[in-house]
Length: 110
Length: 116
Image (cartoon, helix red, strand yellow):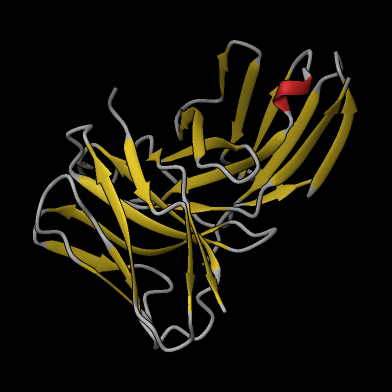
């Protein structure tokens, strides 16, 4: 069963703008992760946030986690055309596996 | 360089045939996973293995089989019993999970299977 649901399904912005993607989930988690997938390629891990953390930064990425609302957001600042990809959230709930959402397709136009 | 290698990248199969997808890693990871991805969809877990000679079914194991005879290798067989096998298959690995913690997954580049 898919735990995380990303929103929006697709997002189109101009270079230099910020991109925000949201993820909602249903059950308690011990961590939440964000991954990126370029078309036809494997997934690449971006960032992991634990259930006792509220915010985490990595370069131009900022992730927040609100366990009371069972939601997370990924912010990409100053987007570049090379950021064009699909972004997935994945939740870890204690069974040694990750459950992925359906992803947000991000298009960054030059 | 360390990483995960999946082969073949593209595979065509006739209905009724079994096919085996290869996944090899040299990251010294204990846990390995197989996911299936359909167009516009997220990843769905087929099988996973946390240790050699042991594996567990995921959410969509029917029509698939795996083996884990070596730490480095986790091949997936798509059998003729899988009714809709055309999909993109992704293998991943991670360090052995302790307790309820699941860490970062490292993915291969995927194998695209098309049934003719």
